[in-house]
Length: 268
Image (cartoon, rainbow, N blue to C red):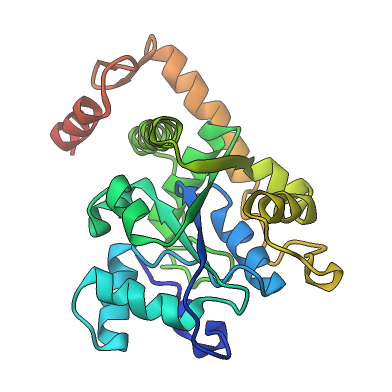
């Protein structure tokens, strides 16, 4: 997976080093609209710079760039550099990234006064198709260079992406609902239809003051979905029904994600 190179630029550093008083954690899954939300929050100048700092590829680059070894050291240095003057540090985190810091509870302990914003996409099948296309092309973010590969429909890949997204959404929901932490939810559709309203809700939730000038009026990045996504969604539903509700090599939808992955390995 190609890294989002822009995140390493000093333009996202705050003008003066600061100690965070509170943290925004965007609890996300791939292709949920978290990048759109993160960039809009950056534009306000009130939420730090929420990037996927715990993504394994990003984390390795940050260790090299900052000249440190441990994950805690990376986070400490990023908090020093990317906390905005109002005392807010932000990070975007997929469920799969939590292993880098030792799990959900450890993330909560490591970050000052964390507030969680769970972001989900109402149409999870379209999200899974977008995820599969990104895996094939290498284009995860609008403007990223492509591998030059034309995406091709793959039922098994979409099925695996769908199960992973459902599983990770559920894990986020369970962890947030049972931890007693402060959290709220926004959707991909909220962000796309009214980004200023979504940012205002997050600011109110965190008690962050937004100036009128700071409120984003439009999206900074653009949605990547197109006619291919819609065609693949129809085809996937038809193929799933034709299989009698069984996804991959006779693995029923009621089976766990581990068995789906095992079936995909056998089918490879």
